[in-house]
Image (cartoon, rainbow, N blue to C red):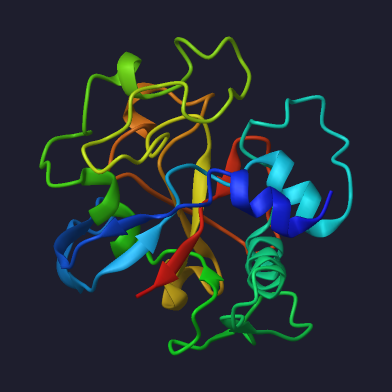
Length: 230
């Protein structure tokens, strides 16, 4: 299947227009808050699916999970590479330049490029909240697959209720890689991921919950979602 045909019918298209605004992020470990201005951007309504990931890469996943489930076992570096592949397939300018550094320190983001990219952490939480200020944007069982209702497995995207901006699975199902380095002075190259996954307890499924790992880390409840700059 050609990447272009998959792109036209995938949950990555059309993307949701997210308005400009601001968000206060919080690190619970250091009890630190910081305000971030967020410009208008585009965000996919669902995480990248196995169907789209396999089609763009020209390879079939070995996972028994269905084609409409979020792709998992994808490292931060692999997610960045996929963004570039999809950008080229769609005739867009790739956002990233990258080399062979195993820590991903040589990945450079071109802010002028119009291609696909990972959302920043501030963009992710701002979009997740969709104007709300509570722990999460709805009742957990209505919006998310998590430990108590997932049956121990990942589920198809968009099977739970979206937030007010039409974004699905921002909480639960799979965690999602973001662009940001977590804390370089303490954790070196570790990158942020957000949102909670199918195996998490409710505490992990909150709009503000932050986690991190090495850019080569892969696990069965971690995927990613596509963004684009306006």
